[in-house]
Amino acid sequence: MKISICSKKTGLDSLLDERFGRAENFTIVDLDTNIVETIENTAKNDASGAGGEAVRILSKHDVNIAVVPHLGPKAEKAMEAFEIKTVSQGDYKSVGEVLEAYKAGKLKEIVKINGLTRL
Amino acid sequence: MKIAVLSGKGGTGKTTVTSNFAVNIKNSISIDSDVEEPNLHIFMDMKNPTSKPVYTLYPSIDKDLCTLCGKCGDFCNYHAIIPAKNQVIVFSESCHDCGGCKLVCPNGAITYKKREIGKIFNGRSKYDTELHYGLLNIGEMSGVKIINQLKNYTDSDETVTFIDSPPGTSCATVAAVEDTDYAVIVSEPTPFGVSDMKMVVEMLRQMKIPFGLIINKSGLGDEEIYHYCKDENIEILGEIPFDKKIAELYAHGEIFSVSIPKYKDLFNNIYKKIVEGRRSL
Image 1: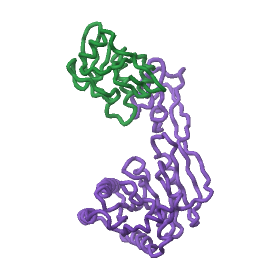
Image 2 (image 1 turned 180 degrees about the vertical axis):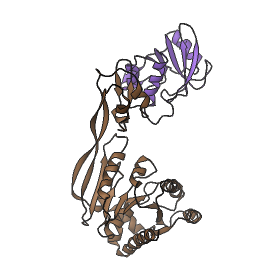
Image 3 (image 1 turned 135 degrees about the vertical axis):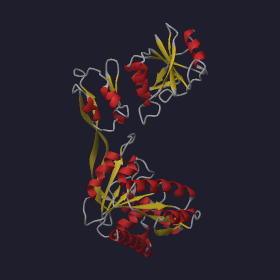
Image 4 (image 1 turned 30 degrees about the vertical axis):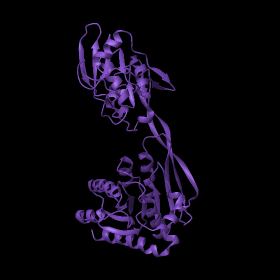
């Protein structure tokens, strides 16, 4: 089971990125082995559709759960199509903090209102 | 001959200049290619135009043929087509209709469907001149396709076509200006006007399109535009004064050289300069 977290820099000390599709990096944690890997979000500077492409990148890295700030309509549709579950990063500040919160079951699922995701 | 009228900054007088050319230069055609918010037809008082839809294509996937190989997703720069787990998702509004996904699909699973993105209106003005404009549907990302189709109405050598272009230096402006013989920049002598004009100058030089400048609202702002033109060797074709009477006429939807005939010569002389300048090349 792999979880992805939107991060500004690398590793567990990094601050969270407030954007999904145009996040700097994704820190991916394998919850079974605790191996932490940070990948660059190569979609971040794309002209359009960065959200959908970012989901595709996560899928290529076998991510099952994505921790996100919020999602645009295209990213949301792509998450469904790639069967990736999404949870909200809430007000947590660092990758390590949000990871612990996830493990403790404190992160909320993203709620959809009128096709747009809201926290 | 095709002459583009553009500005960089919005609201400097592109449509004012285009409409004044259109009513003064005999047998001219005018085109409003600012398809996001066309307004030339209002000033020209277009009568009973005919319209036709403009379409764009977007991919449709045959699920039986698709193997989810991912090549279309790797190819698309705009991420309009995304091969997912058990399906391919298409964001039709992001598609630029390049036809590339069909070319890279090894299984022939992609065909195209069409979607209306706007309309083109053709007709004549109350000044009995030929006029065309495009209108992009609300929510659409790009009017380039409409602009390219609008420019099919310019292909006569005997007539001159004035193309009222979109502001800025975006894809839409490039499309409007592409393949024109000359560009008239309309700027106002303010810091914002000059700043945005510089981007237009850079764009036109890259596109190798000869150009000159009309200063609108002359008397407003400062002297920077004159220094800039001198330094950069840019020809000032003419100046329209900052005059309340002109602004009032604009507000009433009137073309100012029709109401104040002394300005007819301004546009006729500018046009003469452009034509003579081209002959001397």
